[in-house]
Amino acid sequence: MGIEGVSVASNHFMMFEEAQREYYRQMGRLNTFGLENEAHSDSILKKMFELKDEESMLRKCSASELYVIQKQLEQKIDDFLRELDE
Image 1 (cartoon, rainbow, N blue to C red):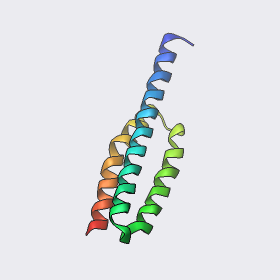
Image 2 (image 1 turned 30 degrees about the horizontal axis):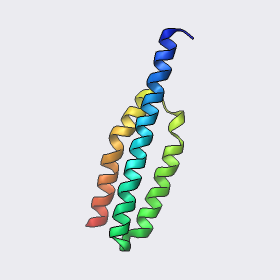
Image 3 (image 1 turned 120 degrees about the vertical axis):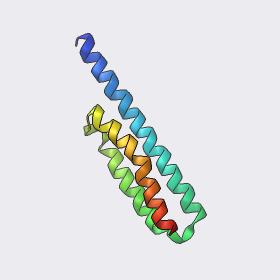
């Protein structure tokens, strides 16, 4: 594999790790919110399972897709939690 191939693979791996860390961070937010708001525990548990399923699909994504996913994930969870809080 040439230098360019190594660079592309390295970039993809870094983006994968960053996206994965963001999933873990958002799962932590959901867990904390669920502990503080037991009334929404079923909805939060369902969302956590959805996130876990999405996370398992990350390996199939390109580096650019991973970047977009990572950037949109926090907003997605913010919107979900805002809906529960209404």
